[in-house]
Length: 402
Image 1 (tube, helix red, strand yellow):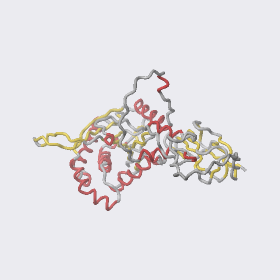
Image 2 (cartoon, rainbow, N blue to C red):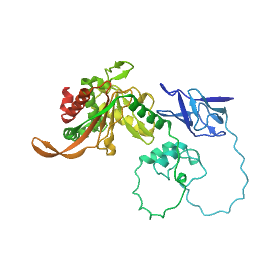
Image 3 (cartoon, rainbow, N blue to C red):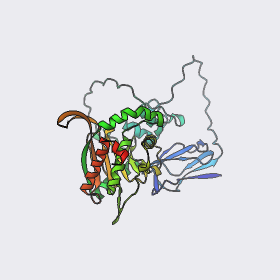
Image 4 (spheres, helix red, strand yellow):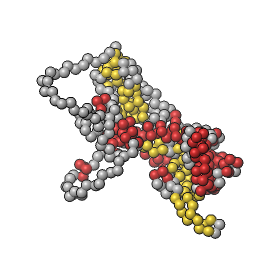
């Protein structure tokens, strides 16, 4: 008796996926809930577990194939696979015991094929020695993500330059198919530029008061709430404050209608090894500083581990993107459709500023608001940024809703 393995429900508005990796091959024994394969959608990666214990008898959808919801992936037969007979080999003479070899790595192992998604990540990050946890030491995508998260040793001294070697240009290139996530990112960003009348306005904010408040209360905050007090909760609160005054920045266009949102679902853009994702904190306007920080920490961990669900990346009304963590001093963020506004944060940099007729050094940050000019006028965009600036330069305004 055999059991069919089919594509599970992928989430709202997602109708197809690509078979990224098969963890098992025909003839392999599988246990209940053991991972059979990995599917890539345009938003998340979905693992498909085995519904029964038995033997994988047939793979219907090969790696790289596009499949729809409920499409047949494989067949599993009940019962274990019969072990293949082993050829008799002469017994080797006994030798002194040697230490057990280390777990197989991507560099030392040549007879086991790694997961394609793992090979792609290793190539992108110049990794050659990753410990595999899959079958027979196979390197999985999670192994590479774990290796990237670990601190690395100082790089060795560069080798002496080699003489130029004549070679065909194509032999020095590598062609890798874009993941569905990367394809979707490319399409959505280009569609955003082609559809919205996008414009960016800039301002700068003196971070002195926020930094002082954070330094004063960070230890007490951590002790009471179990999470660190970061800058994102201040920016989230400041944006909520500004969105209440300029609601069109929190609205969207639907045909010839403008849909105003009486709530704030804050998208927090996060870079991951596989691409940019935007987890959403629902009802951020109703949350405390501690609740916001906990939600950001939880979503960030899920994003790095590739564990975000479809629901956790849908329904955003406004987005914050922090390029400052990568050292960006100034940029123009691209809208996340159908949203009408996105705030770009940047690096905090000490700069000389004229304050009350004197030149003083202050920690300054450039802010950038990209907005859809079809719905947000210049006055509204500038007002929004000014309100964010005022709230951050005097955080007491947030407490008194001023």
